[in-house]
Length: 278
Length: 346
Image (cartoon, rainbow over all chains, first blue to last red; front, side, top):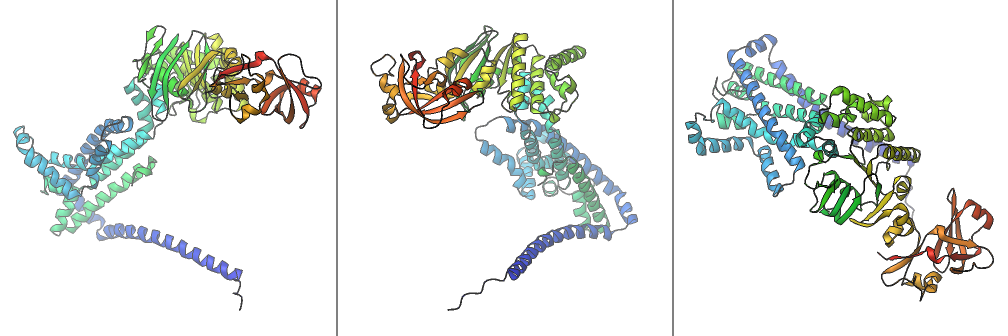
């Protein structure tokens, strides 16, 4: 019976090198595809329009209205989210609750709830159940600009709370404890020790919440509708302009959102907290 | 100064059971025990960071059990020093003074004075993240000392330092204790640290205080097996079992007052075991043993003997030079009856 041939070391080395190459090229190839895909989308947007058309579209009354409304509502809703997220995140980080898993699930719901469903749920709450009593007080949220803030707040509050909690959790719990033995009450220890140490993480959370509000469309359209010069934020403007064939305006709106997204990413990365992004 | 009365708390991983301890003014008490004994939890209860489930904490006659940490006026230096990384050394030291609304100039003068005492004046404007372990320890101590707290809680302040720095800082701590008339409760898992610093010691294990007293009382008369083991006393012989049956020490004590009762064992400190060549020494317990190992420990030699059961003796350099013990030598062992201590086998 013949002995099996001993493998040739050179052939083994070649096969090994070939496998290494396949592994490396497939990894780099996947990365290249994804980068090119995003790059192609951006280039296509920029290439579709020219500077003068872009400027004309951006300075149009309707676009300016939607830019202003977007920046205003997004900033207000982010500010409210963060103002509530700091104490709420502190509570999650420092206190133990009964039924904490229920609290966690409820808090996470706005993130996983489909946007259209979230908007519809808000419509049912503030239109069907609370509509009449609130209207009597002179405040009817559906189809209003305040409603936009409410929809944006609902969609981003969990995100803000989670970001703040992660930032607070990253601070060594012994530091505020020692601050208390040095004479700080709970609030002073939070303000002088915890908050400065969690500042970057909290700002990063705020920046990302702001960015998330910026692109919010589903809940806003369901809850506030898509009425020109009334509830027309930038994503709504893109949708409306595209649906009536005004592509230059739609592209201008998209490029503005793209620009704001890039600025947000730069700010976020400068804060050195990439971990919150995904 | 400080009285802990029947403190109990359960934090899951760590707990305290009915702990009572008194620290008198001016004492330097080391709360010593193995890792996980509950020492830090006890210190944090005194500092006000945990509220005990039962029991009371009394400071200078005032019940402070329900007082928050900021109102207790107790200085606390945690194990990791917990310096505030976003503040420089000076800001760290003046932190508590700012909370007390001390005028800026006075706060600075106090900080400089504490820094001088701890020999860190040259570090006042340094970023705390760039300090060495010993420097961080001194800054943490200065941050507490500027507040003129009369009770100082130190949680393993020397455990993360190299031996030279530990020795230097031990001397410094002893000097500060003496000069500022402080009362100190110092947690450590290293009983040699207690020898350097403490006037009194409390041995803690499994969430209970086993024994308290002066260093000498506890070291010479440990009352629990766990205490003797923690103090590094290696010759502990139980009343029953194979080891006891083979041990001439236990069998020869039969019928005497020193023979351990049920639930007790005997312990003999290695430095109280005498060795000699030739005839057995008169009086006390005397028997022959074989030298199994002679280990040089720097200033002393540790001799492990086979006397039916292992027995450890400590010899000075001069004693070892006189005896010239080698492995396998037959040697006469004598133990004075005053060196035999009966203690609870727990």
